[in-house]
Amino acid sequence: MPDTLSVSALDAFVTGLPKAELHLHIEGSLEPELMFALGQRNKVDLPFATVEAVRAAYAFSNLQDFLDIYYQGADVLREEEDFYDLAMAYVRRAAADTVRHTEIFFDPQTHTDRGIPYDVVIKGLLRAQADAKAMGLSVSIIHSFLRHLSEDAAFDSLKMAEPYIDKLLGVGLDSSEVGHPPEKFARVFARARDMGLKLTCHAGEEGPPEYVWQALDILKIDRIDHGNRALEDPKLVERVVKDGLTLTVCPLSNHKLCVVDDLKDHPIPRMLDLGLNATVNSDDPAYFGGYVNDNFLALTRRGLIGRDACLTLARNSITGSFLGDAEKAVLLAEIEAYPSAR
Ligand code: ADE
Ligand code: ZN
Image 1 (spheres, rainbow, N blue to C red):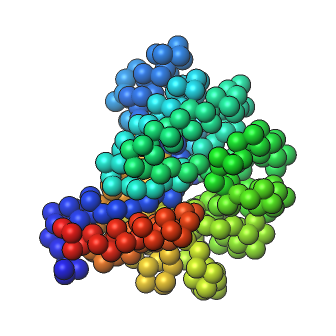
Image 2 (cartoon, rainbow, N blue to C red):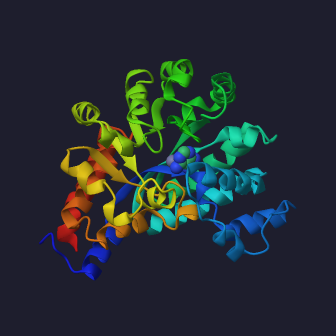
């Protein structure tokens, strides 16, 4: 099959391509419709009159602009059922995008700091994980620390996770990047690794290449979230390629948060050319205008990537996941069989 498919043939190819999603904040999948429904159910007033007004407010000039509105939106999440409904809405969208496996972040401190017990949050997510499995979609859960808070606060949060440790895949580090370098969390990441958790870290989204170096050398992470600004440092690129680390890249997010000015200049093709294990992900789909397939289509429709790069990105999503070798082999075989099965 040629690499140069028509736009509609490439759309269809992407739409049915088996894939994994490795960078998704479950709170960022809260669509305005569900936000309103949960606001009503929990008697939480929203500072918006309509769903349209909420969507109109989603114009961001940087990460912090977005985070302010994202943390406010999460306030409607109060009960176990709310977290279940939120996660199931995402699971259904992911399944529709032929996602076979997803590794989702949640931000426990956003909830526990406003008095919602850790158990309420995790139990809702675990119920959705079980229902997703019955639908043929595997969901793993990553506990993410908020980097604008202290390392002590991250330790407290990790303590709350202890009763559920065997249910968690790993820890992550998100929220306001600049001014909160990875080294601030060196001890808590070391502790998480000792507990058997995988380590990921948002780095090089807005922060400098130095933060990516720290994530590698000090936190000793297993995967880089975003990593765009690593491209500014050839030695760093060389190191990431040598270590075979996966980058979870989020094109629509990058555009909405002004990490890239124009999607036609998105660095995914360059990353692949450099030998980086880039993947395509949606980050916060309800806020950035699309789920994982929309992120692929944002690249294919601009002519940035063709069919072969889509296959590479799908393979990278499986090899860069934290699945076991046998599970990876099954999904990789499905991807290999996909072009001829169409
Ligand atoms: N939390 C949710 N989305 C995020 C992003 N893109 N960067 C940092 N923290 C986040
Ligand atoms: Zn993110």
